[in-house]
Amino acid sequence: MAGTRLTHDDFVRRLERNRLQRRDLLRLLGVATASPTLAAFSGCATSPVTGETILVGLSEEQERAIDRRQSPHQFSQDLGPVQDSALGRYVASLGSDIDRHAHRQGMPYSYRVLNANYVNAYTFPAGSVGITRGIMTEMQNEAELAALIGHEVGHVNARHAAQRQGQAMVAQGAVVGLGVALSNSQAGGLAQGLAMVAGQLGASALLASYSRENEREADALGQQYMTRAGYPASGMTQLHETLLAKQRERPSLLATMFSSHPMAEERVATARRLAETTHRDTASRPGPQNRIS
Picture (cartoon, rainbow, N blue to C red):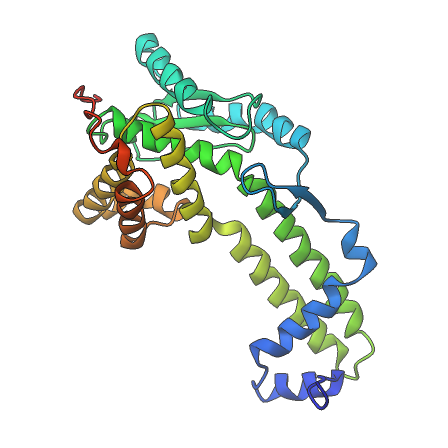
């Protein structure tokens, strides 16, 4: 629109008066991200879940390579797999029951119970899943464990790690483009400095953890996979209720998990709503009675 263009000098003046508005930075970032240079750093793929086009920063082979290269180190940091081979086989079998209903068949899914006592569960991009002993002791029944595994498999199938990497590349490319766009300003040094700071904050926010949108999608996919495997959808609701209750009792117990998997009452409500609507036919399924310990 006429009269809304932000010039270099306007940018600097607003900076000096601390009047820079969010839309100003977004407008400049929009120009930067339209550059041919940025296009070389990002790629598009078809979502295995929705069929829509998504921005990714990793190919499927790169996802597999990351699992092979990085997962052994993380598993080692979490004190390695438990020595209880029966427990390991049990979790691996349950995981297989879940992932056979996933959208991305043929991925090298694997499941390990790790000796770490803190509460956490995570997955690498191609499906190498780690579940700590700490979170296993908090599970009330098998349906909750199925929900936990389903959630992690959901992240793999939505390609959340690849999407985060794509977003990070966009942020980095925008910083480069914005720096070039501002280089001719009379106060170029100051402006470029701010551009670098803004870009670093943006990239940091993108990489800090899964977004709430990512978590909601992984929940919904996990609920879908676990019900297809024969579990009641209420297991996902129970899982969230268990984790939130433990967090209220001992906030430090779930600090690591909640920092990478943002939790909120809204996720409990959404899981309950899906259990009562989309998956209402699973309500009569008897919940497994065995306690995980």
